[in-house]
Length: 337
Image (cartoon, rainbow, N blue to C red; front, side, top):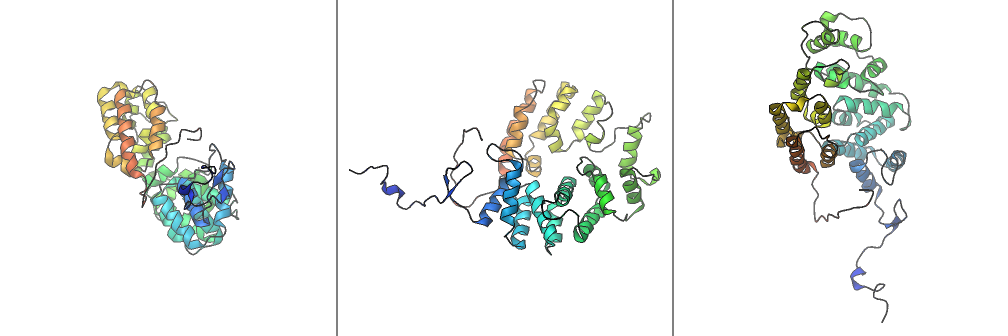
């Protein structure tokens, strides 16, 4: 009898492996479109178990090079809106900008929808990896329009972060103010003299707080703009109630270090927000991000918060994009997972 391992009838209709993966194991080659779509929906351009961030970037650039603008535009929008990705859609938008694509304005409007995405786009385009180092006329106008149309709240949120900072971007594109408050805000942002009376309300409150004015209330601005000054436990408690859902999820240990959760009522309120199904769905959070937050909680974080994160993980599974057809889930316990 012939070796049954070599002549199994079950393998008769199975496709044959036609490629090798990163580790040299037998694999199945994807079409360029399939390859890029998978990278955009799963890639992080950071160090992974098998592949470096640079290798991921090289693969994306090489694969996108021969694909048409329409597909890249559709994939950038899908990756941002359905895949909830950040860096990969920003990179595809930068590639379209470098190509001078007529589809750029549509893609920019739907992909570059917050300050972080704006900084990502500018950083990637000016880095030279897409083939150019300057913004160019059309991208510059799109960035100007984003700044001109942004509200005070959106601009303050965008001012958190660097490389480049929002001030760097304002210096690059020189947006023309559409109102007196914008003229004052942009001047203040880049360190130029401005008429403080023309600054919008929240920015004036932030300046008063930073200057230590007696009786200045805690301004309703992104909390990272406030942490360069010492805050009382009561002020940290205020921040815990104001933070966005994502900011709250990422700063539970910080709040615990400032004794916020010693107030059982406040701890219960925070837990209720974390386990709110609607807020979890709206936050675009992935289950693994919640698992990471849960795994890294300090012992001073109360059990009610831990249970809320566990419940949020269940709700976050609803954010995973649906798949058509039969899906096989293969649990992986390897080091890469």
